[in-house]
Amino acid sequence: MQRAIKFPKALKRGDVVAIVAPSGPLESSLLEDAKAFLEARGLVVQLRSDADSRFRYLAGSDDRRVEELTAVLRDPEIKAIFLARGGYGTQRIIPRLPLREDIEPKAVVGFSDNTALLGAFREIAGWATLHGPHIRSGTPEETADSEELLSCLGLFGEPTLPRFSGLDTIKGGRALEAPLCGGCLSLLSSSIGTPYAFTMAGHILFIEEIGEYPYRIDRMLWHLLNSSALEGVKAVVFGEPAAFLPEGIGAEDISPVIEEFAEMVDFPVLTGLPCGHVSPNRTLPFGPVARLDPGAGALEYLEPVVR
Image 1 (cartoon, rainbow, N blue to C red):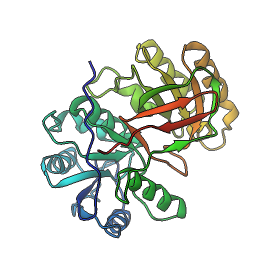
Image 2 (cartoon, one colour):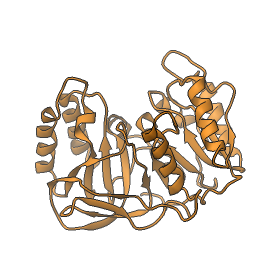
Image 3 (cartoon, rainbow, N blue to C red):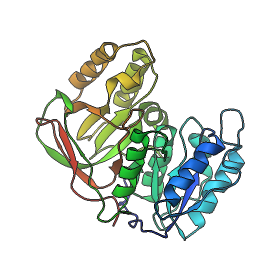
């Protein structure tokens, strides 16, 4: 049974937040850039000196990454956790994290490999989370993404309620209201059977991916179908299809996969949500209720992710 949702408090200037690297490695210059971005907007930022560690394809050893996240989770002063990047590694450390229902919720933001962490915070601790960009200010698009994220967290006043239009409806249906969950398809698929797999029933499921061949997308979607993970799902909204594929493979090669998937299910299926491995990478809160109108190709949130 899915746990009740606990919403984090809105951010305000002077709050303490943390940047952590639980997955793949990131250059120190990008970490410092993220720190400077948040500090310039009035936040007090904790960033460990070893956050730029590298061990093979990981941001340091499992022990280092567990220690980093554990310290942040146990620190009552920290109000938000900004995950530094994706890559690979979160599933290695989730079983060792002190995720408990009695911990006061913090805002947690990330995407890509951090899909597994978002699932863990939701399913084990019961927190609302945010599928959103890793803080950057390198391009105007990255800056805008990061600004929207902070706006959703209420830093600049009343929290923003994201709205999306122009989605492509593959399979229609009536307008509906439900919270969202989801993220990177490879993480959703490989999390099935674990304590941190999203409980998808009663939700609008968001699916995105990067650099995967059509047959692999097909296999992972069939895994969701065959595992019964999609039972009770209200709708599925895919990201931008072209982003799913390696360079050189056109969106026309993924369209038949998504269209066949839509034929297999009995709920609305849409594509084109600008979230995940795309630019812009817009913030998608997991927990608050949103309204999806397949006929209009629109998704809008009805309540904020912070309280």
